[in-house]
Image (tube, rainbow, N blue to C red; front, side, top):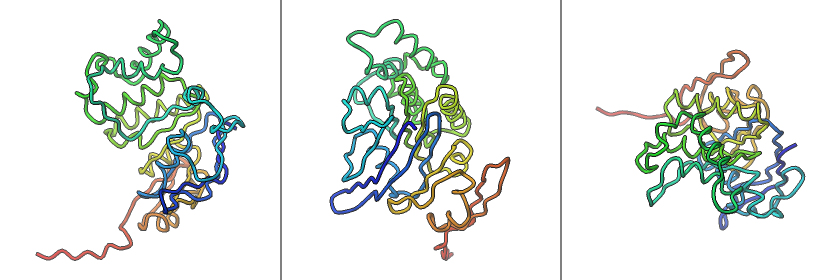
Length: 263
């Protein structure tokens, strides 16, 4: 097992945001967190990467508690891609991706660091942007750069918060294909937070559906993505079809859709 979470609670002031979270992610496994806004997906990712400190519970990587790991050790183990990130000063795409090598740098970057950055830029089709200012790129292009920076970091675990939210359909598929290849070929464990149930079902080995900060359902996409679960968690009527053993969701209407349009 690569990562294990036991009995995790997190509280913002008096509001309990995560309650009794227990889950495991194996080497090379892709686990995706599902749930409506406010269900705790981003908070859970931030607890794993130690941006936030849980009220109680433990998180282990290879049987070692992350609370006992130095920041540099954790940075070599976990790569985190937030939903968005702003930069107030000019920085090129190449230098942004090179920052992913920071946990391994004693002082100056080496030829190996430059080679890794070049390979990652090629992998994500970002070569033409290498010398562009990050602030000149579109939201989707920036997101791909942040993912590239994390890949250059060479982590054993990747945390991706809505990695496809700013991307068009083609780039959504490209990025998720790269993520799946990294998981299966290099044994990287991946935890993603996503809203798109169909993409999550297609690219995940395991799904965790959260509701009000608790795990409502956990298991394979076929087990988790059902009409009943979607109705209970999202308040939406939906039909779930099966295509090549992968659930495909067609939403119908929200349960509260009693709208009257006056003309």
